[in-house]
Image 1 (cartoon, rainbow, N blue to C red):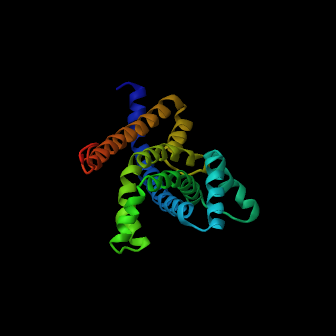
Image 2: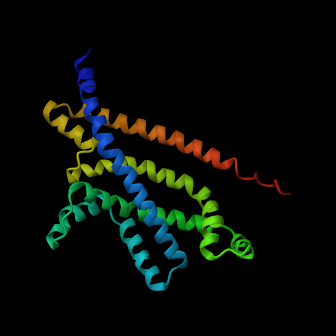
Image 3: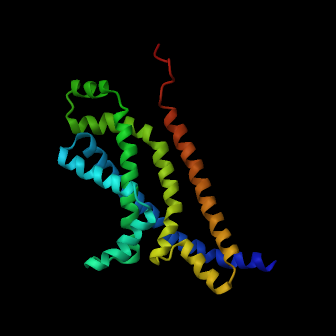
Length: 226
């Protein structure tokens, strides 16, 4: 086996371990937390009182208008100056949740707004309350609209978790950095890491397409009712 291939084979278990123990949990927890935050922000934007609307709009403006890397640095390296200290993993998780929440809130808000007003009226005519109409009628329809952009956000998040390396979180990219520092082969290690991310993204994209097709089967074609 060529030396370069042997090096990649030897480093693969360490990279996969870091991915399974840190990258995958960080991605799943960040997306789940960000999705819940995004839903709350979207509902406030659409139905909340004006003071809360202004507050969440300010949050979305701030997070979407500044680089994620800068936000992570502020949380991990800046907040200790005012007495707020986070360990690396919670700091990264907080940064990603805030970022995902800001972006997904816009997706969810647009998806809810796309549901025709007649659907609200139909739900109320059946005696549903606002919460029942939202849960049983509006959110299921909005979910079908939101799936593609939310899936894209999830795939982007998988790659963005590599930024956690700057906070010393021992995820996959930092594992590659550590191995490269001892083997003096950064090109091979970084290419191997990139291939792993590429494989993950390819699998997730395939799953996204399958999910979209599954939703499309429940949508009537244009002109079917005529």
